[in-house]
Length: 359
Image 1 (tube, helix red, strand yellow):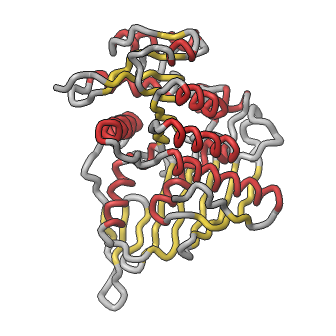
Image 2 (cartoon, rainbow, N blue to C red):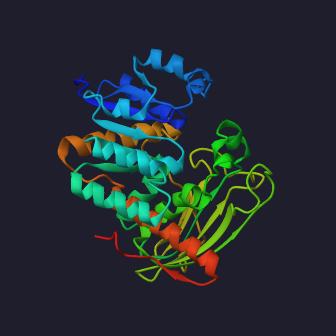
Image 3 (cartoon, rainbow, N blue to C red):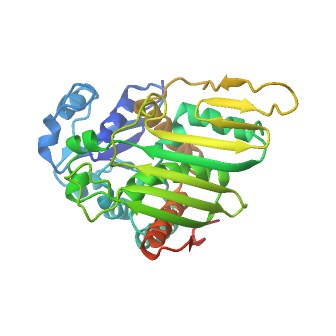
Protein backbone atom coordinates (compact mmCIF):
# COMPACT_ATOMS: atom_id res chain seq x y z
CA UNK A 1 0.00 0.00 0.00
CA UNK A 2 1.38 3.41 -1.01
CA UNK A 3 0.77 6.79 0.58
CA UNK A 4 -2.05 8.85 -0.94
CA UNK A 5 0.20 11.85 -1.61
CA UNK A 6 -1.20 13.32 -4.87
CA UNK A 7 -4.41 15.29 -4.35
CA UNK A 8 -7.02 15.30 -7.11
CA UNK A 9 -9.91 17.73 -7.53
CA UNK A 10 -12.82 17.04 -9.90
CA UNK A 11 -14.70 19.66 -11.90
CA UNK A 12 -17.94 18.26 -13.30
CA UNK A 13 -19.85 15.39 -11.76
CA UNK A 14 -21.10 13.44 -14.75
CA UNK A 15 -18.50 10.85 -15.75
CA UNK A 16 -16.24 12.65 -13.29
CA UNK A 17 -17.84 10.53 -10.55
CA UNK A 18 -15.86 7.54 -11.88
CA UNK A 19 -12.62 9.18 -10.76
CA UNK A 20 -13.63 8.78 -7.13
CA UNK A 21 -12.92 5.04 -7.36
CA UNK A 22 -9.20 5.74 -7.30
CA UNK A 23 -9.56 6.40 -3.55
CA UNK A 24 -10.11 2.67 -3.00
CA UNK A 25 -7.02 1.63 -4.96
CA UNK A 26 -4.24 0.86 -2.44
CA UNK A 27 -1.59 0.84 -5.21
CA UNK A 28 -2.28 4.44 -6.32
CA UNK A 29 -0.86 7.64 -4.84
CA UNK A 30 -3.87 9.59 -6.15
CA UNK A 31 -6.68 10.65 -3.84
CA UNK A 32 -9.79 12.67 -4.71
CA UNK A 33 -9.91 15.46 -2.12
CA UNK A 34 -12.53 17.80 -3.52
CA UNK A 35 -15.17 18.30 -6.18
CA UNK A 36 -16.76 21.27 -7.92
CA UNK A 37 -20.22 21.16 -9.48
CA UNK A 38 -22.05 24.45 -10.18
CA UNK A 39 -25.42 22.69 -10.19
CA UNK A 40 -25.80 21.80 -6.52
CA UNK A 41 -28.90 19.75 -7.29
CA UNK A 42 -26.68 17.26 -9.10
CA UNK A 43 -25.14 16.25 -5.79
CA UNK A 44 -28.37 14.41 -5.06
CA UNK A 45 -29.16 13.04 -8.50
CA UNK A 46 -28.86 9.32 -9.05
CA UNK A 47 -26.27 8.04 -11.51
CA UNK A 48 -25.79 4.73 -13.31
CA UNK A 49 -24.24 3.31 -10.15
CA UNK A 50 -27.62 3.78 -8.45
CA UNK A 51 -26.35 6.35 -5.95
CA UNK A 52 -26.36 10.11 -5.67
CA UNK A 53 -23.09 12.02 -5.93
CA UNK A 54 -23.51 13.02 -2.30
CA UNK A 55 -23.61 9.33 -1.36
CA UNK A 56 -20.54 8.67 -3.52
CA UNK A 57 -18.64 11.50 -1.83
CA UNK A 58 -19.39 9.93 1.53
CA UNK A 59 -18.54 6.43 0.31
CA UNK A 60 -15.14 7.45 -1.02
CA UNK A 61 -14.26 9.80 1.81
CA UNK A 62 -14.41 13.07 -0.13
CA UNK A 63 -15.48 15.75 2.34
CA UNK A 64 -15.06 18.91 0.26
CA UNK A 65 -17.62 20.11 -2.30
CA UNK A 66 -16.78 23.59 -3.61
CA UNK A 67 -19.34 26.25 -4.49
CA UNK A 68 -16.72 28.07 -6.56
CA UNK A 69 -14.16 26.54 -8.94
CA UNK A 70 -11.47 29.01 -7.83
CA UNK A 71 -11.99 27.96 -4.22
CA UNK A 72 -11.12 24.37 -5.14
CA UNK A 73 -8.07 25.56 -7.09
CA UNK A 74 -6.88 27.50 -4.04
CA UNK A 75 -6.61 24.37 -1.90
CA UNK A 76 -2.93 23.45 -1.37
CA UNK A 77 -3.81 19.75 -0.92
CA UNK A 78 -5.02 19.51 -4.55
CA UNK A 79 -2.23 18.96 -7.08
CA UNK A 80 -4.22 17.80 -10.12
CA UNK A 81 -7.58 18.92 -11.49
CA UNK A 82 -9.75 16.48 -13.46
CA UNK A 83 -12.02 18.50 -15.77
CA UNK A 84 -15.18 16.60 -16.76
CA UNK A 85 -17.46 19.56 -17.35
CA UNK A 86 -19.30 20.46 -20.61
CA UNK A 87 -16.92 21.01 -23.54
CA UNK A 88 -17.36 24.77 -23.80
CA UNK A 89 -16.03 25.25 -20.25
CA UNK A 90 -12.80 23.30 -20.79
CA UNK A 91 -10.71 26.20 -22.08
CA UNK A 92 -11.36 28.53 -19.16
CA UNK A 93 -11.14 25.78 -16.53
CA UNK A 94 -7.87 24.42 -17.95
CA UNK A 95 -6.45 27.94 -18.10
CA UNK A 96 -7.40 28.71 -14.49
CA UNK A 97 -6.02 25.39 -13.25
CA UNK A 98 -2.66 25.88 -14.98
CA UNK A 99 -2.36 29.44 -13.71
CA UNK A 100 -3.07 28.10 -10.21
CA UNK A 101 -0.15 25.68 -10.57
CA UNK A 102 -2.23 22.52 -11.00
CA UNK A 103 -1.62 19.66 -13.42
CA UNK A 104 -4.65 18.84 -15.58
CA UNK A 105 -6.58 15.82 -16.77
CA UNK A 106 -9.33 16.88 -19.17
CA UNK A 107 -11.93 14.74 -20.88
CA UNK A 108 -12.18 14.93 -24.66
CA UNK A 109 -12.22 17.27 -26.45
CA UNK A 110 -9.42 19.31 -24.91
CA UNK A 111 -11.02 22.54 -26.18
CA UNK A 112 -13.42 23.50 -28.99
CA UNK A 113 -11.47 25.89 -31.23
CA UNK A 114 -8.06 26.27 -32.81
CA UNK A 115 -7.40 29.56 -31.03
CA UNK A 116 -8.19 27.98 -27.65
CA UNK A 117 -5.84 25.09 -28.47
CA UNK A 118 -3.02 27.50 -29.34
CA UNK A 119 -3.35 29.32 -26.02
CA UNK A 120 -3.48 26.15 -23.92
CA UNK A 121 -0.37 24.73 -25.65
CA UNK A 122 1.49 27.97 -24.97
CA UNK A 123 0.39 27.97 -21.33
CA UNK A 124 1.43 24.36 -20.72
CA UNK A 125 4.82 25.12 -22.28
CA UNK A 126 5.21 28.24 -20.15
CA UNK A 127 4.22 26.65 -16.83
CA UNK A 128 5.93 23.30 -17.33
CA UNK A 129 2.85 21.55 -15.92
CA UNK A 130 1.47 18.32 -17.35
CA UNK A 131 -1.82 17.93 -19.20
CA UNK A 132 -3.48 14.67 -20.23
CA UNK A 133 -6.44 14.52 -22.60
CA UNK A 134 -8.49 11.55 -21.37
CA UNK A 135 -9.26 10.02 -24.77
CA UNK A 136 -10.79 6.96 -23.13
CA UNK A 137 -10.50 4.65 -26.17
CA UNK A 138 -6.71 4.74 -25.77
CA UNK A 139 -7.28 2.86 -22.50
CA UNK A 140 -9.97 0.53 -23.84
CA UNK A 141 -8.63 -3.01 -23.45
CA UNK A 142 -9.64 -4.11 -26.94
CA UNK A 143 -8.14 -1.14 -28.75
CA UNK A 144 -4.96 -1.53 -26.70
CA UNK A 145 -4.79 -5.17 -27.80
CA UNK A 146 -5.21 -4.06 -31.42
CA UNK A 147 -2.49 -1.45 -30.99
CA UNK A 148 -0.17 -4.12 -29.57
CA UNK A 149 -0.75 -6.19 -32.74
CA UNK A 150 0.10 -3.14 -34.81
CA UNK A 151 3.27 -2.42 -32.81
CA UNK A 152 4.33 -6.07 -33.22
CA UNK A 153 3.92 -5.72 -37.02
CA UNK A 154 1.19 -8.39 -37.13
CA UNK A 155 -0.85 -6.24 -39.53
CA UNK A 156 1.99 -5.22 -41.80
CA UNK A 157 1.84 -1.85 -43.50
CA UNK A 158 -1.63 -0.33 -43.08
CA UNK A 159 -3.00 0.55 -46.50
CA UNK A 160 -6.52 1.73 -45.62
CA UNK A 161 -8.51 2.39 -42.46
CA UNK A 162 -11.99 3.23 -41.15
CA UNK A 163 -13.25 4.39 -37.79
CA UNK A 164 -16.66 5.35 -36.47
CA UNK A 165 -18.46 6.68 -33.44
CA UNK A 166 -22.16 5.93 -33.83
CA UNK A 167 -24.39 6.77 -30.89
CA UNK A 168 -28.08 7.57 -30.47
CA UNK A 169 -27.60 10.61 -28.24
CA UNK A 170 -31.22 11.00 -27.13
CA UNK A 171 -30.81 9.05 -23.86
CA UNK A 172 -27.55 10.93 -23.19
CA UNK A 173 -29.31 14.26 -23.73
CA UNK A 174 -31.99 13.17 -21.25
CA UNK A 175 -29.23 12.87 -18.61
CA UNK A 176 -27.20 15.89 -19.72
CA UNK A 177 -29.49 18.53 -21.25
CA UNK A 178 -26.59 20.96 -21.72
CA UNK A 179 -25.81 19.04 -24.91
CA UNK A 180 -28.84 20.58 -26.64
CA UNK A 181 -29.12 23.73 -24.52
CA UNK A 182 -25.61 25.11 -25.17
CA UNK A 183 -25.49 23.06 -27.57
CA UNK A 184 -22.61 20.59 -27.81
CA UNK A 185 -20.58 20.68 -31.02
CA UNK A 186 -20.52 17.00 -32.04
CA UNK A 187 -17.57 17.46 -34.37
CA UNK A 188 -15.31 18.30 -31.43
CA UNK A 189 -17.25 16.37 -28.79
CA UNK A 190 -17.93 13.21 -30.82
CA UNK A 191 -15.84 12.90 -33.97
CA UNK A 192 -12.71 13.48 -31.86
CA UNK A 193 -13.01 9.82 -30.68
CA UNK A 194 -12.47 8.10 -34.06
CA UNK A 195 -10.11 10.88 -35.21
CA UNK A 196 -7.84 10.32 -32.22
CA UNK A 197 -8.08 6.54 -32.58
CA UNK A 198 -6.93 6.64 -36.22
CA UNK A 199 -4.17 9.13 -35.39
CA UNK A 200 -2.83 6.63 -32.82
CA UNK A 201 -2.32 4.10 -35.64
CA UNK A 202 -1.66 6.24 -38.71
CA UNK A 203 0.08 9.38 -37.50
CA UNK A 204 -0.64 12.89 -38.69
CA UNK A 205 -3.45 13.92 -41.05
CA UNK A 206 -2.50 15.99 -44.09
CA UNK A 207 -5.92 16.82 -45.56
CA UNK A 208 -9.63 16.27 -44.92
CA UNK A 209 -12.84 16.47 -46.88
CA UNK A 210 -16.04 16.46 -44.82
CA UNK A 211 -19.82 16.47 -45.14
CA UNK A 212 -22.22 17.27 -42.32
CA UNK A 213 -25.99 17.06 -41.96
CA UNK A 214 -28.71 17.53 -39.36
CA UNK A 215 -30.64 14.34 -38.64
CA UNK A 216 -33.77 15.94 -37.23
CA UNK A 217 -34.62 12.89 -35.12
CA UNK A 218 -34.14 14.67 -31.79
CA UNK A 219 -36.03 17.95 -32.07
CA UNK A 220 -34.35 19.34 -28.95
CA UNK A 221 -31.07 19.77 -30.81
CA UNK A 222 -31.04 23.04 -32.82
CA UNK A 223 -32.10 22.52 -36.43
CA UNK A 224 -29.31 24.75 -37.74
CA UNK A 225 -26.58 22.60 -36.17
CA UNK A 226 -25.11 19.58 -37.96
CA UNK A 227 -24.79 16.39 -35.94
CA UNK A 228 -24.06 13.60 -38.46
CA UNK A 229 -20.74 13.53 -40.33
CA UNK A 230 -18.86 11.62 -43.02
CA UNK A 231 -15.18 12.49 -43.37
CA UNK A 232 -12.40 11.42 -45.73
CA UNK A 233 -8.84 11.81 -44.46
CA UNK A 234 -5.47 11.65 -46.19
CA UNK A 235 -2.48 11.09 -43.90
CA UNK A 236 1.04 12.42 -44.30
CA UNK A 237 2.28 8.87 -44.94
CA UNK A 238 -0.13 8.53 -47.89
CA UNK A 239 -2.71 6.30 -46.21
CA UNK A 240 -6.37 7.22 -46.75
CA UNK A 241 -9.17 6.62 -44.26
CA UNK A 242 -12.76 7.52 -43.52
CA UNK A 243 -14.63 8.46 -40.36
CA UNK A 244 -18.34 8.18 -39.61
CA UNK A 245 -19.68 10.28 -36.75
CA UNK A 246 -23.45 9.80 -36.32
CA UNK A 247 -25.26 11.17 -33.27
CA UNK A 248 -28.80 11.86 -34.43
CA UNK A 249 -29.85 8.32 -35.39
CA UNK A 250 -31.76 5.34 -34.04
CA UNK A 251 -28.98 3.20 -32.65
CA UNK A 252 -28.19 0.37 -35.08
CA UNK A 253 -27.78 -3.25 -33.91
CA UNK A 254 -24.46 -4.69 -32.72
CA UNK A 255 -22.70 -1.36 -32.26
CA UNK A 256 -23.24 -0.74 -28.56
CA UNK A 257 -22.07 -4.04 -27.12
CA UNK A 258 -19.00 -4.11 -24.98
CA UNK A 259 -16.17 -3.33 -25.34
CA UNK A 260 -16.58 -0.58 -27.92
CA UNK A 261 -19.19 1.88 -26.56
CA UNK A 262 -20.26 2.72 -30.13
CA UNK A 263 -16.69 3.33 -31.33
CA UNK A 264 -15.31 1.04 -34.03
CA UNK A 265 -12.13 0.49 -36.00
CA UNK A 266 -11.15 -1.31 -39.21
CA UNK A 267 -7.54 -1.61 -40.35
CA UNK A 268 -6.52 -3.13 -43.68
CA UNK A 269 -2.86 -4.15 -43.69
CA UNK A 270 -0.50 -6.07 -45.97
CA UNK A 271 -0.39 -8.98 -43.47
CA UNK A 272 -3.93 -8.91 -42.03
CA UNK A 273 -7.26 -7.10 -41.94
CA UNK A 274 -9.29 -6.52 -38.80
CA UNK A 275 -12.63 -5.12 -37.79
CA UNK A 276 -12.97 -4.45 -34.07
CA UNK A 277 -12.41 -7.77 -32.29
CA UNK A 278 -12.03 -9.99 -35.38
CA UNK A 279 -8.95 -10.46 -37.56
CA UNK A 280 -8.13 -12.37 -40.77
CA UNK A 281 -4.48 -12.94 -41.68
CA UNK A 282 -3.23 -13.08 -45.26
CA UNK A 283 -4.36 -16.34 -46.86
CA UNK A 284 -4.18 -15.79 -50.62
CA UNK A 285 -2.67 -18.89 -52.21
CA UNK A 286 -2.58 -20.66 -48.85
CA UNK A 287 -6.15 -21.89 -48.47
CA UNK A 288 -9.36 -20.36 -47.13
CA UNK A 289 -9.52 -17.32 -44.83
CA UNK A 290 -9.65 -18.04 -41.12
CA UNK A 291 -11.27 -15.48 -38.86
CA UNK A 292 -9.83 -15.20 -35.35
CA UNK A 293 -10.95 -13.36 -32.22
CA UNK A 294 -8.73 -10.67 -30.71
CA UNK A 295 -8.55 -11.24 -26.97
CA UNK A 296 -7.34 -8.41 -24.73
CA UNK A 297 -5.07 -9.21 -21.82
CA UNK A 298 -7.17 -6.99 -19.54
CA UNK A 299 -10.90 -7.65 -19.57
CA UNK A 300 -11.82 -4.35 -17.86
CA UNK A 301 -13.68 -2.90 -20.81
CA UNK A 302 -16.14 -0.44 -19.27
CA UNK A 303 -15.70 3.28 -18.70
CA UNK A 304 -14.65 2.65 -15.10
CA UNK A 305 -11.78 0.44 -16.26
CA UNK A 306 -10.72 2.99 -18.86
CA UNK A 307 -10.87 5.77 -16.25
CA UNK A 308 -8.66 3.88 -13.83
CA UNK A 309 -6.27 3.24 -16.71
CA UNK A 310 -5.68 6.87 -17.61
CA UNK A 311 -5.59 7.97 -13.96
CA UNK A 312 -2.82 5.51 -13.12
CA UNK A 313 -1.01 6.38 -16.34
CA UNK A 314 -1.03 10.08 -15.44
CA UNK A 315 0.13 9.25 -11.92
CA UNK A 316 3.17 7.51 -13.37
CA UNK A 317 3.83 10.49 -15.65
CA UNK A 318 3.89 12.75 -12.59
CA UNK A 319 6.11 10.40 -10.59
CA UNK A 320 8.56 9.66 -13.41
CA UNK A 321 8.43 12.94 -15.31
CA UNK A 322 7.21 11.19 -18.47
CA UNK A 323 5.14 12.56 -21.35
CA UNK A 324 1.42 11.66 -21.13
CA UNK A 325 0.18 9.33 -23.87
CA UNK A 326 -2.19 12.06 -25.10
CA UNK A 327 -0.54 15.32 -24.09
CA UNK A 328 -1.44 18.93 -24.83
CA UNK A 329 -0.04 18.84 -28.38
CA UNK A 330 -1.86 15.61 -29.17
CA UNK A 331 -5.07 17.17 -27.89
CA UNK A 332 -4.44 20.32 -29.93
CA UNK A 333 -3.74 18.34 -33.11
CA UNK A 334 -7.09 16.52 -32.79
CA UNK A 335 -8.77 19.91 -32.38
CA UNK A 336 -6.92 21.06 -35.51
CA UNK A 337 -8.26 18.09 -37.50
CA UNK A 338 -11.82 18.77 -36.33
CA UNK A 339 -11.40 22.47 -37.16
CA UNK A 340 -10.26 21.57 -40.69
CA UNK A 341 -13.33 19.32 -41.04
CA UNK A 342 -15.60 22.26 -40.20
CA UNK A 343 -13.74 24.42 -42.73
CA UNK A 344 -14.28 21.72 -45.36
CA UNK A 345 -18.00 21.49 -44.58
CA UNK A 346 -18.37 25.27 -44.84
CA UNK A 347 -16.33 25.65 -48.05
CA UNK A 348 -17.19 22.39 -49.81
CA UNK A 349 -13.46 21.88 -50.49
CA UNK A 350 -10.63 19.68 -49.18
CA UNK A 351 -8.73 21.45 -46.38
CA UNK A 352 -5.14 21.03 -45.21
CA UNK A 353 -4.62 20.41 -41.49
CA UNK A 354 -2.22 22.76 -39.72
CA UNK A 355 1.03 21.18 -38.60
CA UNK A 356 1.81 23.80 -35.96
CA UNK A 357 1.35 21.44 -32.99
CA UNK A 358 3.45 18.61 -34.38
CA UNK A 359 6.79 17.89 -32.76
